Length: 303
Image (cartoon, rainbow, N blue to C red; front, side):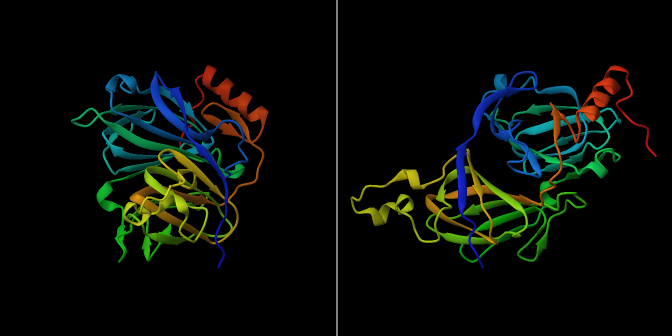
């Protein structure tokens, strides 16, 4: 057994997408090899409807899969194939854009006006980029949730973990997507396939992924007895944690606990040609996609 070392930690950066949605981007658009097979990760979290209500109007996707996980509020969606629906708190949508789809996503806040969710883009290998589009909409009640003896809670969205299998299947990158809550002061180790790229994204509390022993930065308040805390040891809200190779990830939760996503997938290792929401292998394929959009031939007939 080998613990994956932390290779890089960065804070998600504020940006704006769609028709003026304020969000934080953990990675995307700059170095497609960085997180292969994953391309982009956004944290859309707002307490003010003015910052998200204009949503993401009609736009195309080709050559990728988009994964939307909602924690608060709802996301209404519709597409060029006639599909419509709404994702509520705890729901997941895994959309395989494949050969091409036009869709829109319009967020709505909860009773307090709050909206929170994540969107991850996963690449498709060349032989699947022009596959037929499909959706997997999963209700919160259908996502397995496991509580360990120490109070750690894991929601298994994709992949197998602790004897449970997530409801989303047939994904090219063979990913694992876990929503993990670790109680205050608990040290926990999670298995990760050694052949997969992996990252964690912290969105509540603080913790330390760098060392299997308890770091200075996450001593509980009752243990400090006036000692100075080095908070630089901890990963906090909106922190992306990238890992090196190994088959385990270890985290030590801070004095208020920790909640994070742990996501891994098999690298595709193919050339990437990227133009906004269209990701192909070559520039010629990008030009073809743009031509298809102009000529109204972007949506391919079902075979």
